[in-house]
Length: 326
Image 1: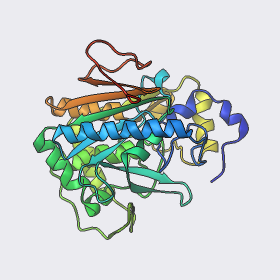
Image 2: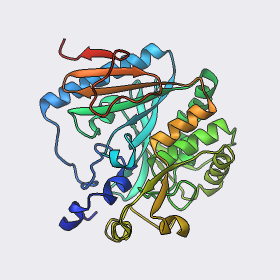
Image 3: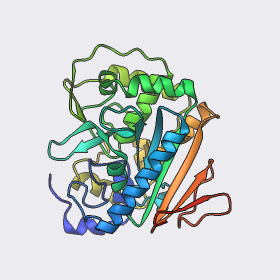
C-alpha cells in the first residue's frame, strides 16, 4: 500500500479524525497507518507490559467473563475524542486469557480481519508509551452473557465482518465498516436477539477472515435495531472542506461515498467511536461499570465511574495510584 505523500503529513486536522477508528494488528499511527512506525524503547515496553499485567488483574478481580476495552491510539482531543479503538476482552480467549477480539485492517492484504490480541500487544498500540489511556466497561451479567455468545463464537463474529473497510465508515451504511462499527453491530446482534445464519466461514489461528463476502442482511438488521434503540454515533466535524476531499483522494482506506450528502455539506462524519459505544451501553444498561486507567511514566491512575480522567493523567483524591516501579 502506498505511503501518504510527504505534503499530506502536514495536514493537521483531517487525518487524525479519519484514522482515529483504525487499528492495525500492531500499531495505529496517524500518518503511517500501514508502516510499522517508531518502536517503543525497552524501558517503555517494560512499563507497558507491567501496565497490561495490572489491567489483567483488574479484569480478573471483576469476576466477569468479558469486558469492552478501548485504547487511546491516536490524538483526537481536538475533536473531543480520547479513545480511537475498541474491542472485546475475553477471559477464555483461545489466544490467551483476556485477549482482545477486534477488527483490524490487514494492510498487506488490503482487507479487514478479526484478530485476537493479548492485552500487552493491545496496549502497545497506544498513542504514546509515556502517556497511555485505557477504558474498561463491565456489563451486567445477562448483557455480558449475550455478548459472550456472539463474541466468542467465530462463526457468529465473522457474520458481522464486512469484506469492505473504511476508516471513516458511516455508522448507518452497509458499504463499509471500521473497527468500532463491527463492535457496535455485534452488540446489536447480541442484545437485539438477532438470529445468525449458518455461515461459510473459516478460522485460522488467531486471525479470522470471512470466506464469502456479503453480510448485508445481518448487518442491516443490526443497524436497524441500533436506530430503533437510539444509538447515536460520534459526530466528527472537519474544519476545512478541502481536507475532506484530499484525504479520500490520496488515502485508499478513507471514503466519502457512504456518507449522506447533507452530512458532507456540513463537513460532518457520523462514525462509531468508543465514546458513542460506551454511552449507548450505559444508556441501555445503567448498572454497567466503567474503569479508566492511565499510565504516565511509571505512575498509574485508576478511576472507577463515568467521570473521565484528566488529559494529563494527574488525578484527584478519589483515584487509586500505583507506582509500577515499587
